[in-house]
Length: 243
Image (cartoon, rainbow, N blue to C red; front, side, top):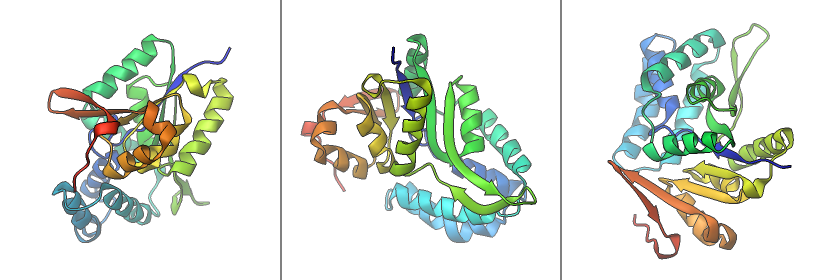
C-alpha cells in the first residue's frame, strides 16, 4: 500500500528568513569568509529586499553565487560546525503554522522530508532538530584535497526539487496524490504541483502568479500567510497582489 509524505522547503517556509544568510554571517565572524564579500556584494541585495524594494529571489541567488565562491578551499568540517551552531541558536525561529504542521504529519504517521536550497549541512541539522525522516539540500562539492571546490549540485530550483521528489517517492513507495508539499517561492512551484495537497506559505508574488495561472494548481492550492500571531488562509480566486 502506498504511503503519504509531507515535503517541506525550509527557508521562508519553516524558517522565517534564509538560513544561508545566518551561515554566511557566522562564517564571516569566524574569519572563514572575507567580510568584504558581505558588504560589497551581498549586503546591497539584502538591503533592497529588506526594504521591500527588491526581489527575494534576486537576493537569494546573489547570496548563493557569492557563497559558492567564498567557501572555495574551506573544509566541510568548518561548515558542519557552523551549521550546527546556527541551528542551535536560530533553529526555533520558525513559523508557528509550519511547526504545527510538521507535528501533525508526524502524529498521522506521514514521512516528513525537507527539500531545501540551503547547504545540505544546514538542512541535515534542521532535519535532526525537527525529527524529520529524510532531507535533500544543495551539495557543495569537494575536490581531491577534501576542500570545497566551488562546484555545486543545487536544490533550490523546480527541476532539482522535482527530481528529488521522484527519487523519494520511489524509495518510500509513496502516492503523490496523498502527499503534501509546503513552499514559498517559484522554485517550489513544481513540488506543489506534483502533490495532492499543496500549501503556499507566505508566497512570493511570482509564486502566487504562477499558481493563479495554472488551472489545476489554482483549484487545490491553499495559500497560508502568517503575520505576528495570526495565521490567515486566503482564497486565491479573489486575491489581489500589489506592487
